[in-house]
Length: 80
Image 1 (cartoon, rainbow, N blue to C red):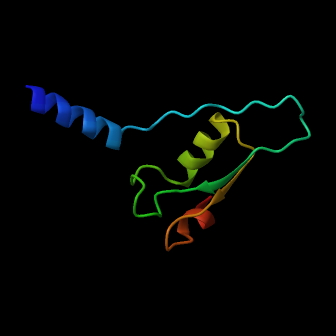
Image 2 (cartoon, rainbow, N blue to C red):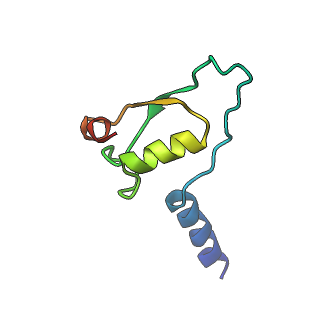
């Protein structure tokens, strides 16, 4: 049972989306930029995390702009 619980915790950590602290600025003239974002075009990102989900996740985190920096591919940036 203990090994099963440990495997379940590791699997949940690897597969479930991880929350992030939101950004808040008091000056509306400032732009919040995520300078290193990935989509499912990268080999190390879940297949379900496409460009639309990247945009929604970045917006929910408080970013105004996200640079897509997928590994060995421009597909995610084109889709975004």
